[in-house]
Length: 236
Length: 270
Image 1: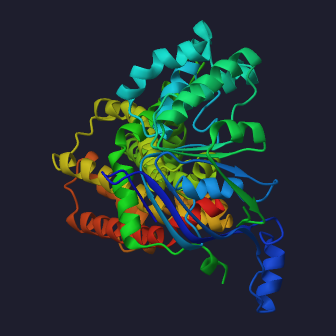
Image 2: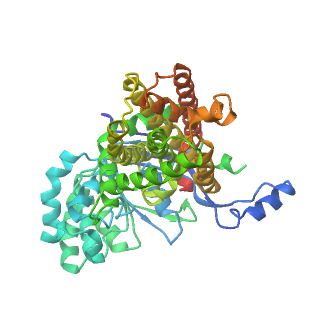
């Protein structure tokens, strides 16, 4: 797999990608069972979930791809592949462009630290150095609407406040490839209105967008292509 | 076998991952700094807790063992103090290395940072904790009139660099292994506890004799002795230096090969 940000045009190409996720549950972690199996010369059976099957897609600058499908259809797995987190079990992936994944909105956030400190923490996970985060702090604080609470530890925040902070940080960087799982979190409606405007601007600047959502109207609003997944395969 | 179903990895990919991980040094250093600060948040003594803990430990063990072994406490306490500090850095790092891809489960699963980033992060964090704890060691030469040998100026930095490299090496092979076999993480903890008593920390290797197996074939003993003997006033032992160096190189090699083989499987198993 390649993931580079050279002068090449921004693109994401998947060809015949399969992902098998092993389920390492409690039953095959059990030592007694393992010993019994090895005495019987049986290799431990490990359940495999076919998370993606034969997925081929190409995306270039300007593509806003909406992923739809039922729970467990493979949307998040596909996002993880596109974001360069998961290498496929089989098949070929070529990514060029800087990718920011907003699959886990709370990535890198630590409840012990203040909102301000968490801005920099999250920045590290977004591969942004301190200087470039410092230039964004004002905007992030302003947009989150947290005002002085930004200097309080995150564990004192309500879930809505956390969502606002996480969203404000994540949308402050300018990725070439933006990967999102579901849109906006538990913020209130006033924030959601502002958030959707900011989001529109952000994806306007991003080269490629992958957005997985159950919300059809959201997909229709932000995306110009749709990929429907079922049982790990592209069905439409 | 099941491993065959995980994506195959390459040496080139591993090299690139490590290079990218290293280039993000500002990131893992500042994360490590925050981690250390956060573990003492809202405590009055802050990082001095480590120093205090160490003083208490050395005083207790040093005095007791000097009586038990019938040796002079003025010789024994410096020995234990240096020994336990070096041991502390080493074991903390081995323990972190086996948990590196388990503890960070959440961020490993949803971040596309190079996997080696997480290894460098814990090495930096454990080294900072160590630096907090060694401040009290400066008192030893004053209190016990044990002047370090000049060769300590070489032995200490080399020894510490070797321990840090060992941390990286362990992270690269113990980390991916224990994310697959969770027994490894638990097993490492138990092994380290046993190793503490088999390694010349609380006792002087000289009383056991240089040719005893616990001294001669114990890499952990080599590391402790490499740094400790010059601090206690002896010339650096070149044979120990070579052994530690070889141990570090072998460990890094095993680390790199394992990492290359298992790197891409980490996000499947974390």
